[in-house]
Image 1 (cartoon, rainbow, N blue to C red):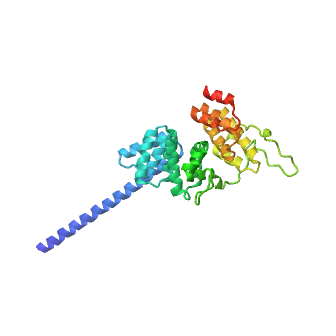
Image 2 (image 1 turned 135 degrees about the horizontal axis):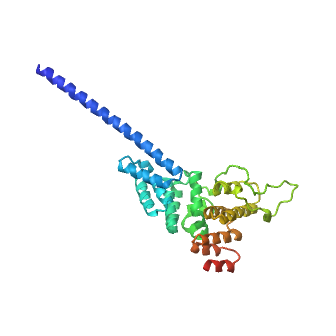
Image 3 (image 1 turned 45 degrees about the vertical axis):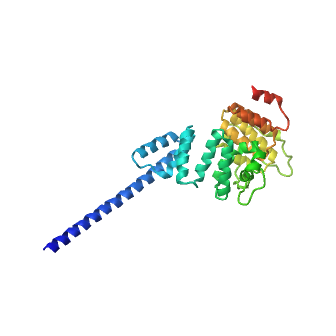
Length: 316
C-alpha cells in the first residue's frame, strides 16, 4: 500500500514537472515571437524615416522587457538622424560591444566622428573597416562611405595616401590594394538619362559644347540626388559634359535650398574630375552657406587659378 502511494506521488510529481516545462517552453516561444514582431516594427519606422517613433517605441519595449537587441544599431541611427549624436554614440558603443563586426554601425560611427569634426577619427574608423571588411561591403555601404567621407579625403589627398592606404585606394587616390576596389569599380546599371542631359551624338552630328547643357527643371530633380548622379554618370557622354551636368543639377538644388542634394552632386563631380575649378568653386560657396567656413576655405585653396573674389566672400 505504501509502495503504491509512493509511486502515485512520483507520477504526480513528474506530471507536474512536465506541465511546468511545457509552460516554460510556451513562454519562450511567445517571447521570441514578440521580439521578432517588435524588431519588425522598429525597422518599419526606420525605413519610413520616422525616427522619433522608432525611439519612443523602443523605449516602451525596453520598459516592458521586450526590446530586441538586434535593433540597437537601428536606435543608434534613429538618434543620429534626429540630431542627438551623444545618445547615438552611446548606442553605437552598446551595439559594437555585442557585435564588433557590425559594418553598418561602424559606418555610422565614422559619420558621428565627421559630424563632430573629428575627421582623423573618422578616417581611422573607415581605414580599419576597409582593411577588415573591404571585400564584404555592399554597394550601398560603399556608397555611404563615399558620400560622407569622400569630400574630406579628397581635401587632404597627401595625408590620406600617407596614413590611410586602404582609404586612399577606396577613393582612387592611389592604386587599390588587393581586395579593396575603388568606388568607381562598382558597376552601375545603365539607366535612361534625366531631363536636361544631352543625348550622345552620332558620328555625323557635331559634339555639343558643354555650355549647351541646360539647367534642369524641377521635374528633372525628382528622385534622390544620388540616383540623379548615377544616371548622369551612366550616360555615354564626355566626362566634361558629365561634370557640367552634375554642376547644373547641383545649381538647381542649391537654388531650391536643398544643400544636401547639391553637395552629393558636387561630390560626384569632384570624384570624376578632382581638379575642376568650376566644381571646386561651387563646392566652396555651398560649404560656406552651410556654415562650414573652414572647409570652404580649404576647398577654395585647391583651385588651380586663385579667385580673390571667392576668398573675400569666404573670409567675410
